[in-house]
Image (cartoon, rainbow, N blue to C red; front, side, top):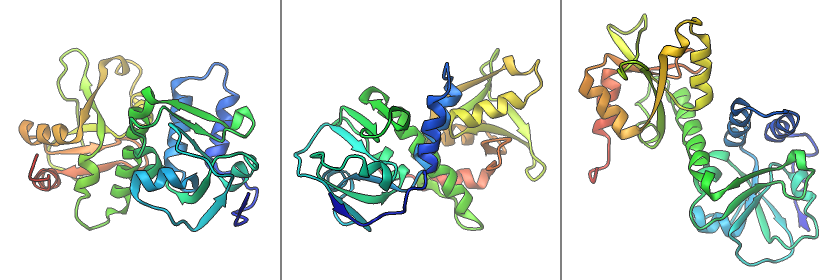
Length: 267
């Protein structure tokens, strides 16, 4: 194999998350969420150039790794870092390129693939496997991170409507009535609804509630377009994304109108 020397032997955050998961017995859903968030936020993936060309039209990368030639495969093998890729030296897996963001990578998982395998040539505790049946969950993690980053980078600019509409959220409900749960924020006049980008953010919020209130909370998955149309329909004063987290973001009624008005014409 030939290629640039990469970034040395330092472990990536993604690989650290995989190693930590391997030590969990038994592993919980929170442990799985921790790994998926780490994979989605990781921005130094090495992927097959054949896959990148088909998925998003890229054939040139800052770093290229040349393995023995191989034909197209329905199994997508990727590496978290240069060191992990080097463990596959001598295998016929084709040309790899990087760095690739986790958001771009996970969003590109589709029906043409049968499985997604991380660091297949590494020790078992450095590996991860997602069957095609789990691709929708992986895509949701990618769009969750895209939303979180877009909101964090917004500043005083326009609301990132495209990213917000492309995600599926966890909407907070009152379990008994199935009504929208609402909270009050100091900077918004009126009650606001609550949603979360991912299950870990939702569980953090519910765990922060008083013990007696936790069983009263429920979550419902809602696609972005439906969520924002709903917010306009119920007349909510706004919507808070990831309430209680460090990245909590409040969207005003004006923001919600902007998101709805920005939808593609065919919708």
